Length: 229
Ligand code: C5P
Image (cartoon, rainbow, N blue to C red):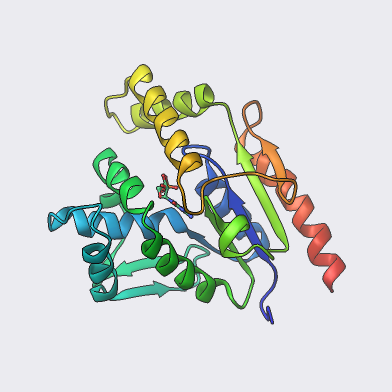
């Protein structure tokens, strides 16, 4: 029984803006928001830090079970992920952790572990979860499933702009090829790959800005939430 509202799943490829769209939407709806990619990234960060073999499912799972995972819900819509007392933030955004994340996200037991935690977090509803397999695997019964897309070229351009704004080096060609590589890995993975079907509300954000995307999804949610009252 979802006592706090509906579940909104936002899935889509890397760099499409799922987190910023999800956070903006959560503010408008007064819902909670979680980036499930951050959960995989947090585990990869810890594993990489202690030098584990990222393909060793037993070792990675021993680490996942050893870590103290906390999910803090406060007045902010974004649910904070805390591992062993450390709030997960910018330490997990670098490319090294991104690469390690793709490796551990392939492992079946890791996916089961994350999926169970995500189901628990979302059980009461009133939450937006973004990732790759939320609507297809974690909450196949989510009331609203959004597949957020944008062309690889546009996603690479946005990433370059973002890095330049932070005065960081950004090479378009390199970023473009990393995006294609990540798309391929996420779509071709054996367990819970990224895939869209017609249960999703498809939004192509290539030519529209964030506010327009949020407003479009908000209208769909509003209709659904009103129909439930
Ligand atoms: O969204 P983000 O780029 O932070 O996700 C990092 C990686 O975590 C993805 O490339 C994907 O391999 C993995 N992931 C996943 N399932 C999710 C969320 C993220 O496999 N639900």
